[in-house]
Length: 438
Image 1 (tube, rainbow, N blue to C red):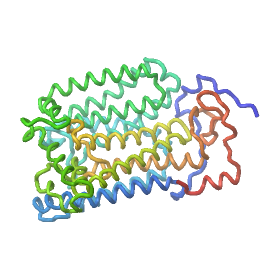
Image 2: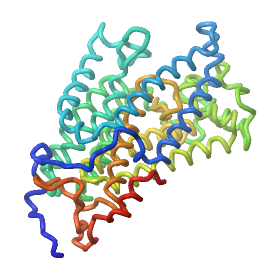
Image 3: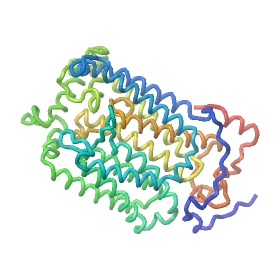
Image 4: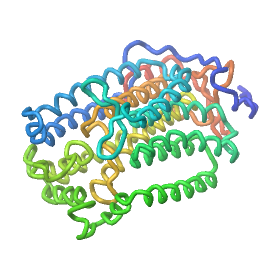
């Protein structure tokens, strides 16, 4: 059967004009990627155990309750689990309708947190709102909203992404949240946002020379941001083995983290038996919880954590490749990149491969805003994965959002125009797709 060729101009039509017809999603979660759900659940359960182990001493010192941080983390995880389940059952295309509103809302929050008496200032940084018994961090919300908003923006541009003008406009939009977060003196979150933005642009198909040019500009801007703050420059001396002069100052956290990892050896000193958590390692239950894992569970525990995030990343990439349309592919790829970038930066900072950045370890470190938003992102990823699995196996490369074409009608040719056969697997194939499979 002859296949029709989509005119190049139709690739650039906005998604809002397209009438997307999806295969109906059941109200249950039967189509969700079981392995993805299992690995996230396992990491979260492990995180609860480690938060209790790393914070019991601090909790007793501050409140007289060793379970203080564990109980709060359990509440945060419950809220995040609700968000994850709701978004996993919500068609991700609905998010595109509210992308602009969400983007505007996050910009307003990032501006408001900089206002005195509205934002809470801690250790010289104004990053939080006091909302009753909890603190809300807008920069933790910014990454997921950035993926939803920029994913729609990029999916609407199509082949226009090959032009420098479109890449320039994208960079200008991206700089708005980057500058606001940098104004909070939060260089770590700024790096994460910039990395996620670059990953989305790469996944959307921008030219390599444009990406290299932006990478050079980002490196220059990063050096300027570091040079503006003396404490950031001092942290550069801690890379590798650090310096004796700063071992008791800027390099204190990195030095104590390495001590903890070294004392753990192969199998660790035992769960709950950490010495570093007795006020030797600052932020032991948040940014440096990976060091406590290494001390108590040894090299085996740290390798298991790295492998778990690697497996999660693989399932996320798989979901992106099987997404029904370009927007879904960008959502899945952006969320996967976001979580894996955070994990990489945290582990690299704890092992003193890069300067300390204050980025938590996803699903494991203590913290409400970050945990809830990470689980919400996993919910969106699960929905993209489920819809891709219901469309049948095979990547969605070359798919375009075209008016009059349903998202369930896969393109018959990939980006190079090669024939990929009929997309319908037939009745027997549809029954196989509907089952939960790894």
